[in-house]
Length: 268
Image (cartoon, rainbow, N blue to C red; front, side, top):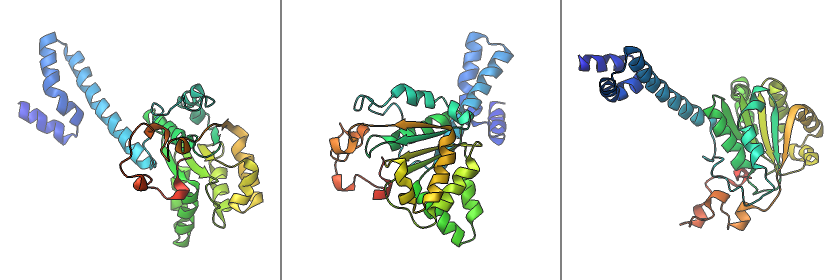
């Protein structure tokens, strides 16, 4: 009968329940659990496994560049960075209210680390997230429009509960960037949340995008309901020979191969 039961659980794809069944049966016998108590325990096992799979799937689909966490961030390195603020953001209230966030500050203070860490935390609470650098976003849309795939590509940026657009200011953007970024911000405005990072002041965005009116329109909508977080302090990379804050006590075997991403995608 036990083998038949295991086979049935496999057919029903109840792997969490199947894997814990033997332990739970022994527990039920030892503790004289009622049928209802036993059923509750094995169903909790199944739900736990499914939750873990969902988190893993959403994390994979988010396309994070680095697997950063809030726990790994060195809050003591730059004391001006407000730890409580970021843990408040990690609660997800701004996503539920469809508000936006802008992390702005010089290169190396941890903007990319914290943006991705927030994304990972929010995924655990059921939020869907998509991460992309500004440059890659524009490149994706330019490429897909050339092959009549604009709406399909745009859907990747419109669907998630939280869109993270990283690295504004790392380099000047291609022509028509303003059009694409404006479309994303306009179509997500007051419907979904967007988090952006920038190492350049807002007045420079027109030059970076190559379209001052588009930059003005983008900022007009984006800043309407945005939490603007100014991050100041020393650069993790400069202080640690090119290493990020969570790596600075770890020896690096091959300094020349330490950055796998292209220069425009460096964490900022």
